[in-house]
Length: 347
Ligand SMILES: [Zn+2]
Image (cartoon, rainbow, N blue to C red; front, side, top):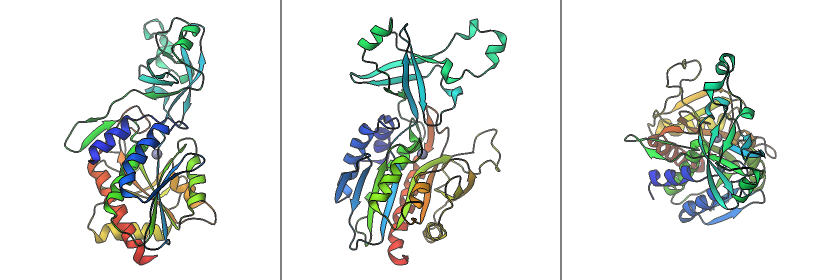
């Protein structure tokens, strides 16, 4: 299936942190044609293994399956749902969003409401409405009615946004963080016909709340090298200075030199840079950005795993809808696959 079709499926699937099942099932289906074996570990990371001619070096690719979202915290007497945030979400983007509550009876639509601005006092209107003052309206009459609709405390809530292709290569959708990385993994596997080394492609759980899945997956896989495929902040919009970030959408894979959790292992950075240069591929370097990826956790597992990150510069991450270029996904996969072929010679 094409990259566009895969990303559409991955983006539209829902997998709020800790509730990754639908994304995992989809990812298993999409990776299956290209690997020898698929296992799911106890924390429910999925590990797809492409056996090489040798078992070493073993390369772990990681993309997280979870997305930022909400969780039902309280159902009020009047039937409104108050919520907790799962992962880093800016309170300012929540108001008036369409959402889906994932109940045991299936997904239920709702909208995020607040006290109407018309009746707010002048002072109130200037302030950001924080998430604890917001609520999800599902049109229920009261708490009992909400229960009848299937809602329970602890239900996951995702943004109700559908994928769209809006330009030749430009697409919009939810959860590109990190379904774009999952799409890179699939494209990379497609390009690896036969490998000397063994590749373990991992879809991790609970990244957005502290790289948790990567901890157990990396321990189990015990790789020699780790590469995380993730998104990063594109700064090519008004109001962002080059010092803030110089990364641009559509300008090639972003290679992390250092972020808040990882200093890319010099050998891994060299490998990625040499691969890009030998293949005459455009790339961008990033450093000093807040946030980190599964590579940070991989690098500190067992006695340490030389790790790095290949990212897609994406606009509006951690909001209900992001924007990216499919070309960047293609090029991230090309770079990753070429680097894997090169590892065979250098490591
Ligand atoms: Zn991410």
